[in-house]
Length: 324
Ligand code: NAP
Ligand code: F7E
Image 1 (tube, helix red, strand yellow):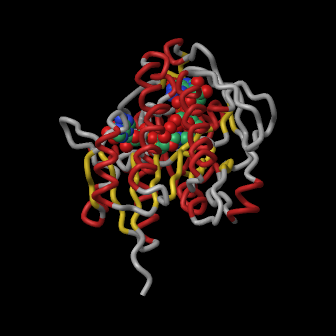
Image 2: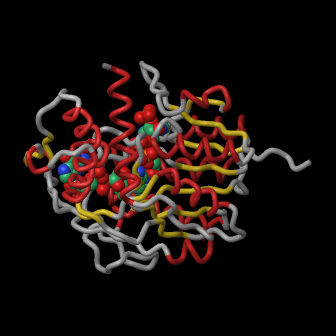
Image 3: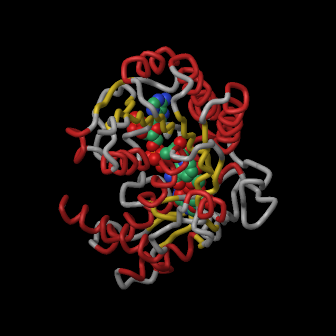
């Protein structure tokens, strides 16, 4: 009988962490989730699998906690998904974002190096590293030009992952993931803000939805599809970096059109432009080229954009109706 594989996920309470935990459980893994101490419990996304996983405390800001956690849990794979992940917040808290999203990666990598350098490591890199894009579509070889403290921090996290691979011959891979969404997306991100807003307006709870730049274009996929690519990277003989994207781009305006349209409403009657949601420096256009992921990993996105939008609107309607 093959021994059970054990994986540690940082950021397990987040959108991706919850989908990855489900996926790894389905593959027969023993899943350990690192959670940080907080005064209230925030297990909404993992409640349904809580009895199947082990949760243990640690923090990206505290290397000792991660060394101890690795010593105790002895995983063969580490998925580093934890981060301060909201771009807008990174202007208000640039140093904290750097501590968590940039230096936090070094702390985790170093903990792995100290405890067991044979552990395979996945880093959650981001299309925000491409920022003011110098090439369309963006590939693994496209130069980075980040446009926010978050993007800058992710570039650091990306390169330190490459550096530990080259310095210590460790199996460290980065997934350069383009935006991926789901009904579990945080309410502050634009897709969920829109689908939640649509549901609230449809149910008579709100009369308008205040948004920032409607012309920004993103390559949006479904989070449930993207976590599979993370796992696939760690199953390769050699570590590497991969763009994970759909290869198609859509504007925020088009997302609004589809989401409102799904419940029979015209977005232009409800969406109000609000300066507060404009960014000091915007990423205007992102569209990834996932050719390498398809060729090397056999990964491809399974959920079409329209299905993603309607899935999110329907989920928000159902959630709100339950609460009414
Ligand atoms: P998310 O929902 O914001 O989840 C972030 C997770 O990180 C949460 O579990 C959070 O814990 C945890 N965390 C934050 N600071 C921490 C700290 N100091 N110590 C330990 N844990 C900490 O993010 P996501 O959308 O799932 O994204 C997962 C990762 O992929 C992030 O690194 C993100 O930057 C990156 N990424 C995301 C996308 C995307 O489109 N979703 C695209 C590219 C890259 P709490 O629950 O306690 O706050
Ligand atoms: O913004 C515009 C905004 O906050 C998308 C994170 O997961 O993906 C995410 O970062 C676009 C931007 O995501 C509002 O200006 C308009 O152009 O949903 P978002 P993001 O900044 O792309 C990347 C890949 C990550 O790595 C990040 O962790 O939408 N926009 N009006 C708005 N955005 C927000 N949040 N709110 C608005 O009202």
